[in-house]
Image 1 (tube, rainbow, N blue to C red):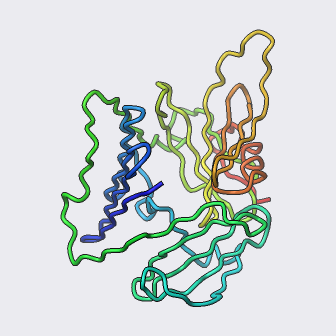
Image 2 (image 1 turned 90 degrees about the vertical axis):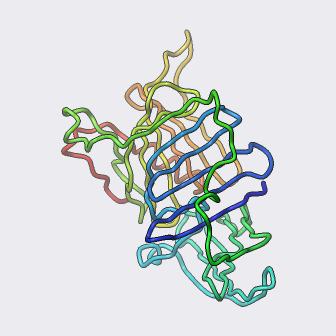
Length: 279
């Protein structure tokens, strides 16, 4: 898929616009922590909050935390798009995460090329800048969507109050997690095609992220029993299971065993006891 990406930092606020130039025609526009997802194929706009430091493009950002679980090395230099770059490998130290290869621009520190690699080193996803423009100024108009939203359904996902303030309601959390992973987000979301909100939990090791969606299980048909399901689509792995009459779905750009591990550990708990243990 070919994408156009516009990125600006102005007065400390990050603005981004990601537009599909073929296929679905989807657009994603972010200003600070507010993200609007324009989905023409579903005639839907989803507005939600996300961490302001999280880029739409999803380029990996190596920190002291992630260095404990990845081996990071510079393996060479090359030119890409007529620009000097150095090549970095980010190799996982265990089987719970994938690795990366990054071609970092010497002048801007931007990753001009990113490869996501499986546990055997095979490339399963690649992002490459076909062209790069660095203007001195980007106007506000560059972040206005070109999608006509007339007649679209608008879904606004708000972050709920902390569990302790939610009238004693049960909270969902992971009892155990793979090494290095921790829960960094919890919200209630209404997904396209549904009217009922689902709980959304986010787990990350600083590079890899896994989203877990918890929703009431639909009534089973006669003779039908709940089963666990595994799927792989492109670079993403997904696993669904049923716990306490709720469907638990974990999805992320991690090995299948990682989403299976996390989904199988998600349980309903009293608010005061929420907090995962590390594996």
